[in-house]
Image (cartoon, rainbow, N blue to C red; front, side, top):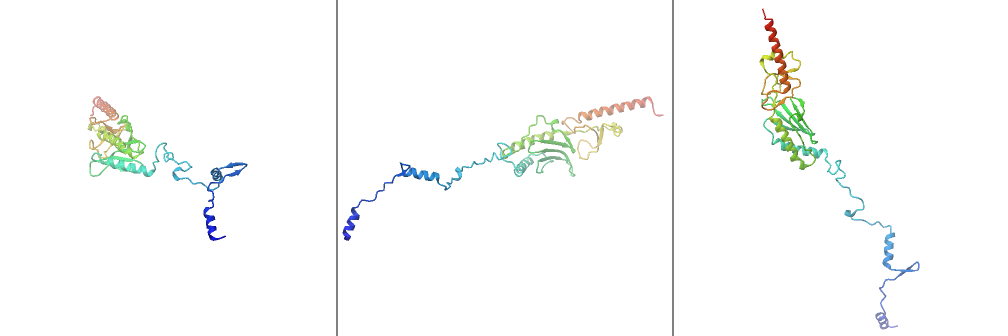
Length: 257
């Protein structure tokens, strides 16, 4: 066979068919695409999934929070919120008032006006919304002076403004109150030492309304601006008056020789 005949045969010979061959499985003709799908279904090669379509259930950060439906507030975040609130409150305080942050809450204190400073009032706020008042280091129920107190709880940064406004309201109410003067009458001083319902207060906290007084053991310490003494000290005053009158009558009936 010559080279020309070989080239002619190759040129005019039909090309191999590109049509896919059907396969016979269990006596049935099956398309190659179906066969490939079955092979993929039974293949042991792992199929990877994109990260955003992971078959594993994503964990919701809110579900991980100790407070249902709220993000986790750790000690660090709570301290940060308290620091923001303390700084905002410090700019709104009256003269002789200071603000101290201790990590668990905010101490707001009124100092004496003298050069030697004493803490005359102290109001403590914590993130849970609790408020504690003390006067001359004696705990006093805040409900005695602030009716319908509704403090804001400090959980998020957007709570800071409302929390500061609530603290400022309580501080202003306490700031407007005056210290109870107790029984300061000079004519009843001879009965102070023998009194079982009162205690002598020598003014270690440098109050301006009195220098030394007899204070009732149930004294509530604070009164409205126009009042000088609380109800307990007023009853103590009545008791001293009765003692003074009884002594005067005895002197009249038994005059000194």
